[in-house]
Image (spheres, rainbow, N blue to C red):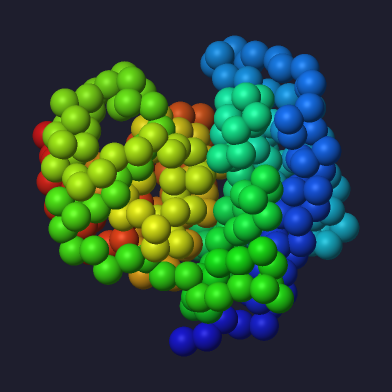
Length: 275
């Protein structure tokens, strides 16, 4: 199968939005920006807010009538046929510490079906993206990219496993199970947030586990990993983030604990988390 022209055009709009986001974010990165702390004890900066505003303004011009679900400014036009989902800076804690392992996440859904998705890592000028039925790609831009495929490692014992903070897995009730996954793996590293997913989609790691996250933290991943030859799911086995009516299947705030893999070790890893 191949992507439709309409979907390719929408992908290009997503890629352009991510490039605009990168330019805006880098104005603030490793500079003295003020940090606010939300009620959930997560940080937010002017870079987060202004980047989401920039993308919303761009989409209002390029795709009028589309809805938006964003971390910083909530839901706009929830009943629209098409919905953009954005996390302007996934990994704000890394960002405020001057660590480059943060990114912009963008996904587009039509009646709950993923059309286009991407992870852009601004400080590294790189991205990985996918379009429905058109494959996944890795590079700095649509003009400078290559096909992106997950690795062919077949066993957890040979795998590089990534995660966010281990204590969050414990908070989610999976501390012992995740300790067993780490012990079974060849190598474990804490390269969390979207950078971990980026590495798995690029074929550089085999597993990323992400506990207690919100919809915008993971919206790009069902399509991205499907097109890259991997697999994405919740720990309970669900693979879809939206129902047939285009409504989220769980609360948009911290309603998910998910993992992505190269596909070949997915069932083995899932077995560690069965109750």
